[in-house]
Length: 551
Ligand SMILES: [Zn+2]
Ligand SMILES: [Zn+2]
Ligand SMILES: [Zn+2]
Image (cartoon, rainbow, N blue to C red; front, side, top):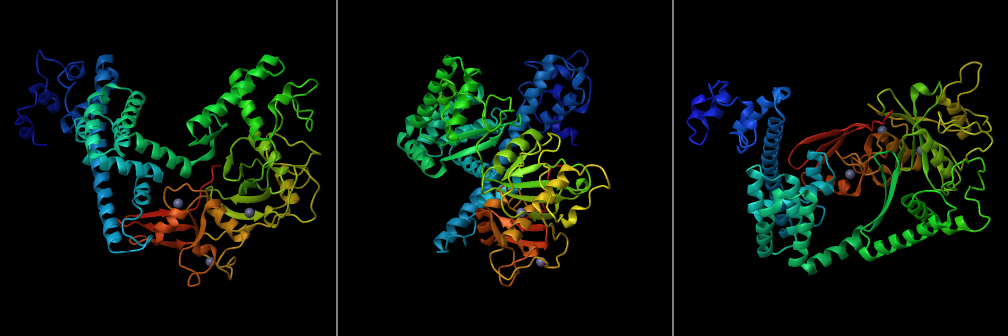
């Protein structure tokens, strides 16, 4: 490094230079002291000097005083904010290029799906490994920040403002006129660094509403039309959440008030146990499964499930639900005690109790079907089999919690061919009994090469072939896409009939990636049956292999 270059910088404190060079200045602060509040490095702008000093601090972190630890924390944050600024500039450049290509293709009269720059969100999401919605928001806000919000952007460049707060501002100016956006930039950038993210979000939303009430109203209406839905999500604890999204505020509040009122009556009756929040959740699940919550406090009512008098829980069992139950069976457990993780539809069931309850509820539904996916040592699928017809949960023998989807029902005459033989003597493992009862024939999956054993002389693959593909790839085969294969198109990599309807030429793709693949600049090949190779318009290559199931 050019020491002279550094010392030639008139703005640099000689002490910082000494610290950078490792030189001790007698009678002056130590390096650590620089990072105390109001120390020489405390207000230093982000860049190579601060980066080097910060790295030195981190290397001797345990020797620092609390004051210096905090100072170094702030310094690292300023560096990160600068990096966010740099990334934002690059995202904006990328986005503007794709938008210019798209405008040109549009002007040239190219039809939808055949325009250059048509899927910038898909391209960016692959590179950053995030959802297309996240990438799209990143794109929109980066362009906004670099074109209409110069003050906010400058705060990022000087390390004062982080990307999260900057994006909060940019999101709220997207629908504003140039004049209003400039005004919002001035007002919000002046306070952004001193506000918590949630406070800033509220202030930015209020300003947006004040400046463009009609545009806000139109956005709400559009979201209700296009994005209204009910979502089930996994909680961090392992439980699930159920929510209605993009509801009108009045509807959501009215539903909540209705739930609150019933829950209060349950509590006041003294007949149903639980805190008020738990009773509200109970009312919600009752109402959405066709049960009347107030039946719980009718005279003579029993809160227990009449079908399951042994069940000590006060709540009734969940109602029947249709599901495709996919038992994930590691190959090396086929001969031993089965303890298979399970999927019910797109939902991974990770723990034994959930599996027991969900599989039990699902097995009562006439549309429920059973499948088995056998996984190899690397966690990828090696074989799949589908059971015909409905298989009710056998009530004769209660399942053990340690082997969730197990059952010992009436034995079928034929055993699954790939499932191996049970060990000589001793009781049959429950998993074995289940496979036997389901009477499943397992088909091996093509991996490195294909003998076209499952090739079909038709465009739309059969249910059996679709299941093989889904067992191999649980999600869309575009990089970073998490769309469930069950909702995807079975896409021919080489179009039919030039390419066969076979494992080696089919891959699940969500609608958006299916369209992106066909747009100019994109190229997808399938070098092996289980491998998808994507080339993006930027020329970058991403390879996606088969799903690795968690063991
Ligand atoms: Zn199947
Ligand atoms: Zn093939
Ligand atoms: Zn996709």
